[in-house]
Length: 206
Ligand SMILES: [Mn+2]
Image (cartoon, rainbow, N blue to C red; front, top):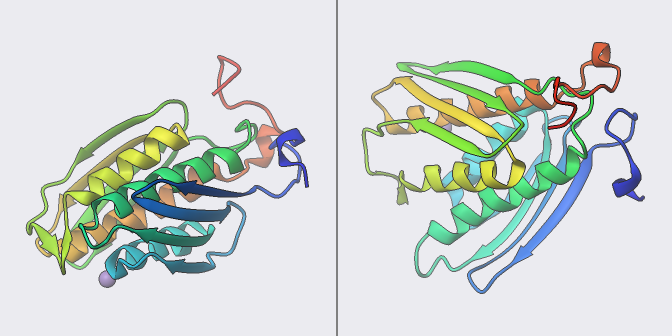
């Protein structure tokens, strides 16, 4: 199938597979934006798999992620490069962005924690206001989540505002963020039938 010739206003499948190989990581990501939340991942970072599954489940986006990274150094390259490759896969699957809702937002609670994620699809930008209550979750450095989202926005051409509004438990803090990210993505990339394939911008492009 020649996905490059399709226009997102078509009923064409919005699927993409991207492979990215560097000396630090080898990653393949497949997405189906109109999926059912099916999830398969083998990243070597169990907590990251738990978070990526939230994107699939709550975004109703099928995700298949295979990553081999230099985990003998630490998780940094693997987490960042999965964000980059996921962003590239989104950009490819969105084609020209015609007919999408464009904006997405969600609040998600989990016990005492509450996070808000707001997304737009015009240009890369990350505005993340999160103070994690712990430096690590399991063995995973909480600083790496910013690297993940920065990689995603740079390559998906997305503007992302992430705020953790409340939260004491660091696992809950980040889990509410990933769930809200999934929900916001779903809203933003869904086809709006009333748009009838138009570009959701007065500028005429995104
Ligand atoms: Mn959990």
